[in-house]
Length: 178
Image (cartoon, rainbow, N blue to C red; front, side, top):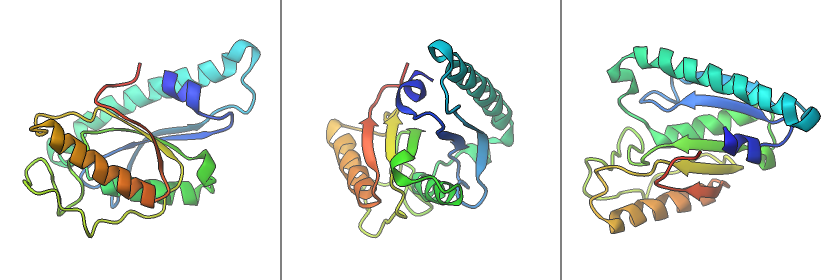
């Protein structure tokens, strides 16, 4: 929540979406909120809103664990960015106010590409909708990154795709935020 506190503008909309094997066709919105436009005395209103969001998110994550392994097994990352483009457009969020936070190893790309099992990193025909905004990606680690070069190759592919989709990558890290 510290990341949201430090990086979201007053009045920003925050939407937590589960990235699953059916992200685009059956999106699971875990919770959403709009930050207050006034932070309150010493930021109290903002802090309380983010604490409420965190509680709702934890509760939603616990409930979604019951969806079943098959539903949660795949995490088609390309679908996440396409869904984000649609959600932002539907809510008329201007590109400069779009902030995404993603926790993923970035290996399960779409229904045809799963870089956990594919030896070759094929992405020549992969395209994302124009999303705009900024993304912070955490947890980019997996036993399937057999060496540093593979991690760097995946990184370069995603940076290229996201740049083409108008997304500025603020963080791409193996660690998790505080």
